[in-house]
Length: 173
Image (cartoon, rainbow, N blue to C red; front, side, top):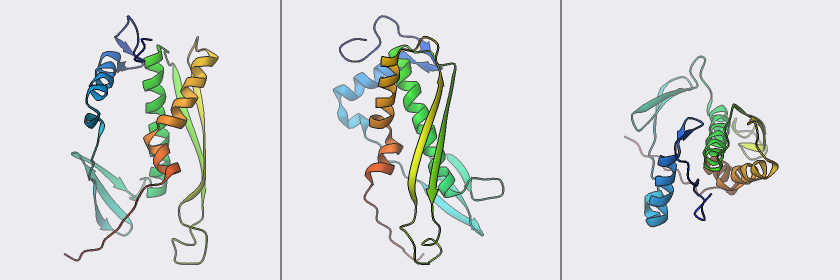
């Protein structure tokens, strides 16, 4: 690794990721921090019963339909998928080849408040995850650095643990 945290002397493809692209993105954001900002806008449309279609950037996802994940399951999927992204990105920057990676998320929530009854605040009150990683030759120091990356760099993890300002407005159309 260089002093900038970039792989030294070997930029190619590892773990299905292009190290050159990662290094270029890091350099670009280091030069112009405004390039790191994202402003996504998602639109969800009711399609009947409890089903909806969520659209963002030309992609569509059905939520709550037959065989589809519900919104709370999608939160878990977003967390697990984000952790995979963080782990693979940082492993790639460290030169660690991954053969297998799974993230298992366990959670708990109570639906009483959602149903309009007295109860605890809505949403998950407990989340834990276990990472199962097969990466031959990985060192304890690299494992520690990946653990640190999960805890410090996960956008979804940070959103869930640090909270976010939330405002809702209903407008009739």
